[in-house]
Amino acid sequence: MNRKTGRLIFTTMCMVILSAAVSAFAQTSDPKIDRKKLANEVKAEFQHAWNGYKKYAWGNDDLKPLSRSYHNWYAEPLLMTPVDALDTMYLMGLKKEADKTRKYITKTLKFDKDLDVQKFEIVIRLLGGLLSSYQITGDKELLKLADDLGARLLPAFDSPTGLPYKHVNLRTGKVSTPISNPAETGTLLIEFGTLSKLTGKPVYYEKAKRALVETFNRRSKIGLVGTRINVETGEWTNKGSHVSAEIDSYYEYLWKCWRLFRDEECRQMWEESIPVIHKYLADEVRDGELWYGHADMDTGERTRTTWGALDAFFPGLLAISGDLERAQRLQDSSFKMWNLHGIEPEVLDYAKMEVTRPGYPLRPEIIESTYILYQLTKDPKYLAMGKKIWEDFKEHCRTDVGYAHLKDVITKEKNDGMQSFVMAETFKYFYLLFADDKILDFNKVTFNTEAHPVHRTWKD
Ligand code: DMJ
Image 1 (cartoon, rainbow, N blue to C red):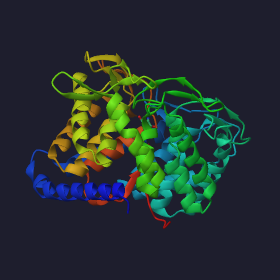
Image 2: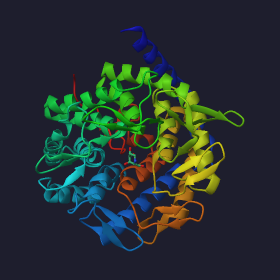
Image 3: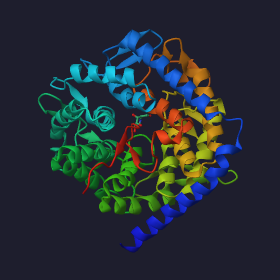
């Protein structure tokens, strides 16, 4: 064991002991939060949204809750909502409904289609969803589907750099859209790596790992990555650096792939990246509020003072990687953003506390971080935070047939959309926050970026 690994294990052990100590006190200390009641409420609301999907969008990708119709991403549906929702149903104990849905998926879903799909979205939602539900149920048909999908996506990696193209045709393997971003080139290894481990085919791990490393290798001299990259030349086409859209889950997978696969190179890439993020992106405003803004990847100079709904995953990532101090301060900032209008905006200028992009498409990241922080601290503050977020979410986004995006968090005007991630992530994290901790062993699970839980069931 080297010194870094030793330090890491020591820090993790301290966190576990500390969590256990506060846990005994915290679990009984707040009579106002009835976790069981809240968990049941979340489950009932998940069923409400699922029933809306079944009634008005069955067999299609997403429900449109205002027009009571449906939306498909491509010319033919790929069952985004059922696949994304399936493991949430199992975790909520909705076994009968989940079994019915699983059989429907294995009978209906086919990938031999002439569709140019966006590889990243298909990987995190469909490949991730099929693999986690396979691990939960042992249904080999789900693994077969995942293997078929994985093989059809592989041509995307055939670029001169090994960085994958953004789109690939599921039938022909034809690739398109060479301008991609770190989130799309670097958020593949949990899914492809797990597929390798479960099928015994190393090619999946190798291609996705190379894409992650090639992304890291193109960091600037000061160690930051940019927003857009050309996968044919390896040149950056947008040099904005941040932890927000188009970069976010690249960092998430550096840490999580070390955790899931014990891949030492992933840990090293994470350990080289994180101090640079703190140095150039962290920003303190007013009386010691911590936020993370945008900077130029070459000079490190501040370019924007914005934070948003997508960025709100970062406190959770800091927490699981052992930095509880920054994680808690940053989560307070996200919660401040949420409370500004009683629902968080897509983007906020934290220096001025002004909304710059007012939509809210039912994003899960803030509740994901709340759940992680509660698991690691057992501080009832996070239950209270989750309860407030849940109540606002229900009040402003619920419709008669499901949940709807908000066009504007200030006016609370709704938009006609309910993306599949609300079933995979938003309801799941709300539920896991309030439900019995025994439902899922937090110390053994790794969530992909779409909240599909993956377990290390293999031996290296
Ligand atoms: C999800 O599809 C994933 O969490 C992704 O990493 C980011 N965006 C959405 C949810 O906001």
